[in-house]
Image (cartoon, rainbow, N blue to C red; front, top):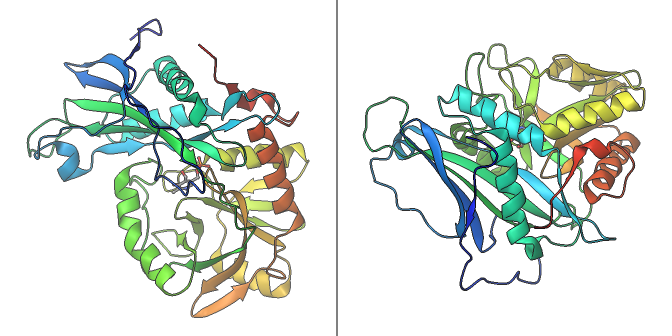
Length: 358
Ligand SMILES: Cc1ncc(COP(=O)(O)O)c(C=O)c1O
C-alpha cells in the first residue's frame, strides 16, 4: 500500500461536543474513528467514519482465540499556540508491527498508519483537551474471519479510536503502593510478553484485582523461571535508583518495551547518569531498601509518565522506599517528559510530531 493511498472521510452528521469536567480514562470517545480492512492478502479501503459499533460474526476468530493487538499513545495541546503533537508515534507504530509479527497478523505500513493518526486527530482536533489532560489514541487490530479452526485469520480490521483523558496526577502525586506478585506470572521466555496483545492483560486481571483488594495500587511482576528478578508492572515499566546507577529489566521477550522506558533511558544518559539494563534481583532490592542504598523507585509509562513508588510488599511484609515520598530524580524526569509532551521544552525536539492542520 502506498502513502498516496487516499483516506476517505465521512463526517459524522451529528457530532457531539467535548464534555466539561473530569474525563477519567478511556470513557469518552470523539465523533470519528479510522478503519481499514484486510482481505485477500491486502489492506484496503482506509476511511474515517462516524464512531460506532462493528458487526462481528459470533464465530469471528478474535472472539475465541484473542488474536488481537493494540497500542496506547497520547497527543497533547501546546498551551501557547494550541498546536497538537504526538510523542514519538514512530515508536508505537514500530511496536505495533512487532506485535503483529508475534500474533501472526499483517503489518500496517508505517506511513499509512501515521497518516491515519494525523487525519483522525485533525478531524477531531477540538477534542484535544488543555494540558495536562491529553487525547488518548488507541490503534487496534482484530481478526474477523469466521470459523473456529485454531489458525491465523485471513481477515482483519485495523481501527483507531481516540478520546480525551484526564491527567493521572489530577489528585496530586501519591507514591504507589505495590505488591510483588509471588504466585502468578505475566509472561515466560518464548511467550507473548513483548507483544501488546489483549491476552496478556486478561491474564493479569485476577492478580491485579487480588492485590487491589488487599489495598495495593498494582503489582510488580517477577520472571517466570525463578521468580527472582523484577520484570515490570501491570501497565508500566519500573526502575530502581542507586547513587551510581539506575537499573531496569532488559527489553527481552518477556517485558513490554515501553516508549517511556526508552525515553527515560535517553534522558538519564543525557544527564550523564549510568542507566543500566540488567535484571534487578528482588531480594537484593529489598535488602537495599533497608540499608538505604536504594534511593528511589519509579514506574514509567504513557498513562502516568513517571510516578514514584513508595512501598513494595514482598514475602508478607511492606517495605518502604527511602522516606516513602517522591525523590528528586523521579520529579525531574517527570518534569522533563511533561515539558516535552507540552511542546514547552528544548529537549529532544525530534520526539515531538506536530499534527498537521488540513
Ligand atoms: C505491560 C506494560 N508495560 C509497560 C508499559 C509502558 O509502555 P509505554 O511507555 O510505551 O506506555 C505499558 C503501557 O503500554 C504496558 O501495558
